[in-house]
Length: 299
Image (cartoon, rainbow, N blue to C red; front, top):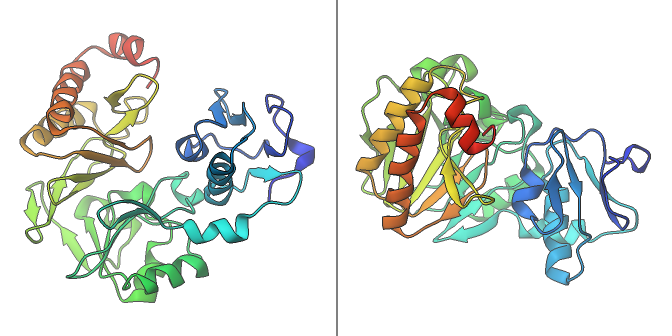
């Protein structure tokens, strides 16, 4: 629970505030960009929400903050607004909410599907989410993009009898996983789901393509709303930037409209624009580090 005695100094006066336990994970800025901004070391409230929808968005951010660093000075409707989560995105694809500190606030997503539902990476394990996932039909597969974002995957797998999918190179994070991807070949799980290994951020990183429309990208690829362009995180590439560049190039062979990132913002673009931006990003990734950081301002 956020502490009013530990507010960050940049907060504007009003009901909502951020305290000093903030890890600057970007969750609040994704959910309520009209209220929260990036100071550099933490997020802060730069504008108090005024409309009912803005208050609702800020309250969702409060609920989803992995470290409980957002609070209100007066009462709020968090208990009622909790029912918004998981939050629908499009076509039975949902943002799970309740980001976990175990994955540094990484996003998790849920896909409702007639042949069995998918959870992509793991949110916090909460009774509310268990109940909501049950009402949506449970979880058949738990797709883990990489070792950083497994969070409470084991608890959800046990709760729903779900099969965890992870790459062999990441197996130490979930050693009892039921389905192990052994190499870097794309795998069609069905007509709707394609697993695409994308080594780079970590050695066994993978992304998931759903219906050639939604790409769940983990820490491989995201969107920067400030520049309105696709971006990759060079400073947070733990395995190989060269491999990540090669993996990004492979994605040019696939069509999609949505980038749904574990870290970083999500976005929907027309297919042609998505492909164009992806091709531009690949070329930028080939630049020397100094030029890359100059372009993306330390992305």
